[in-house]
Length: 404
Image (cartoon, rainbow, N blue to C red; front, side, top):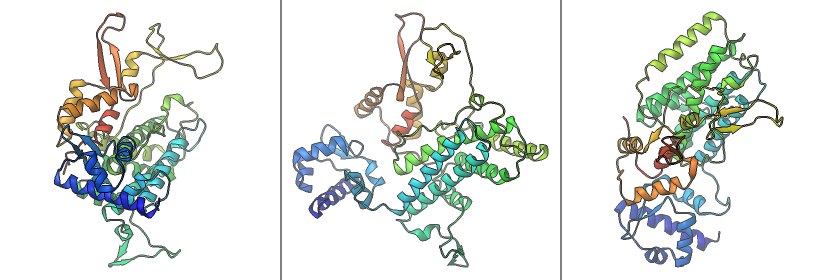
């Protein structure tokens, strides 16, 4: 962009920030005059760039809290059509964090990999360390010293001549103390760290431990996505963030993560004890562990979802019934409303909320699923069930209640 265009972008950012803090309303004509953009350009940006930043109150436009996720540099990046703005330190760390997480998933889901749990735990803890440090750097206004490791007040230098940085445990404790990371997420990360630390001693096969690690790892992925979207408004739509269920692996393939009986018993006892502390956890967006179940069920139900995993037409088929698919959509409308009311400080069931719901419903089964209450009766009334992704989306529109 030219200097003139950057100046217009900076004016828009300053105007949005000022009006948000003053809770002022404005017209698109006023925005046009303030920035120097034509009215048609403002309308184009409203549609393509500012969908989450501006909302029409009916009496004028208001800036949403999403503006507080930007500074002048990141707003320029958001506004630019090309990668013209140098990335900030926290953004570089964030991209590396997501890359480590994706690598962890890819390694785990390889069909024949003899060290899947060990490698997943190492890469996933690396992803968490980079994510937490990225948050600390962002909160310190891009000050790299915020994550430097100090000894007697002085920065410790590594043998390579670089500044040493704090460990995952230190970064986690700092954010836990601020209430930035929920306790259940902190305990999930600590379980993952314990698995990583013990993994170098594993020698023989054990399916039970592999299953337990997968349950903790699946929750770690869910927690990672939720906080990354909440802290950085990150778009995960281009990724498939899931771990293949253990039941899809051959028994010989799931035996990589293992210990002698005494070490295994101690580790399982520790994992179960920490999980038990969070049995009553109510927030659906965070978890200490998540159990996965796979069933092969014969059915003639015409609403079953048919999946063929081979090109051989004579091969047996895996069929998931409608009931199985609905397990991914755990909330009806009234349950969803209760969650939103308890989750946000500024939630209201007004026209803006209903417009948001219509937008989500238009996305189809990404956010909700409609089914007949009586599947065998074509005249039965319908009911809509909602995926947890709906809550993730509302996190971008409303202000979370902070748990101290």
